[in-house]
Image (cartoon, rainbow, N blue to C red; front, side, top):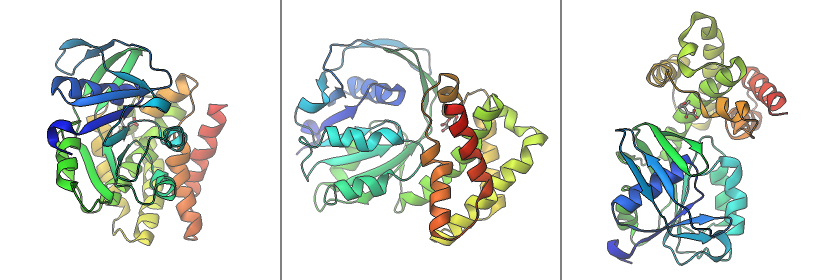
Length: 299
Ligand code: KPL
């Protein structure tokens, strides 16, 4: 394994997966896109600066992927397990798995399937959407938080430098779970409230939503404290309000999922808060209420 030969596989051609493919293309990295079928595709990318590019990534059928060192999973949380099962014949214990999605709960699933593999978990605030099947428009230059869940004995820094090229700038965390909880709180508030009220993120700054926001943050703070992360309702709320302002013009991913009648990530967001709270005997009725409402909207 050397930097020049580190082979990257990217699962799917979702918005973030396509941005990663573009990043690999620009930096001339050795990469392939793993798709359900290995059809030739041209991805039409528009960056945040308005630059446009057409790229023809090397694609492989997920079941007959060429060799790789690192597989990046920029897919929805509920797709992770199924995708890894489909890839199971190709995944060897030395392969690094990179989880990159909203919500929590997949680390436990992946560790159960691949107890030996190096695993990186991450969260990114890059924004992008797909106006068509093969076009991607970046809506925000974000930052990426990454950390090892299972660190390999060898080559960790080589893998880190390679993964750091995908969606820079990056912060590597000793304990990525804290960063994941922080993002989970943001998503527990913004995603269901924007979807239920059919609004853009920025509208959540209105006075009428503050009681709900406080209730969600208070429940998440109790769960976080119980799992060992000292925080307060106020600290979480302040952070959520910052993101509401920074992403004021966006429709959240859950708003988009519900509007386009797609499955949402609610089970891995407010559902995860609910699951953890049950294990810890903490009551989280607001998160439960939002979970139920989104499930009804999913139909
Ligand atoms: O991650 C997001 C999402 O929409 O899923 C936020 C941060 C809420 C931005 O819209």
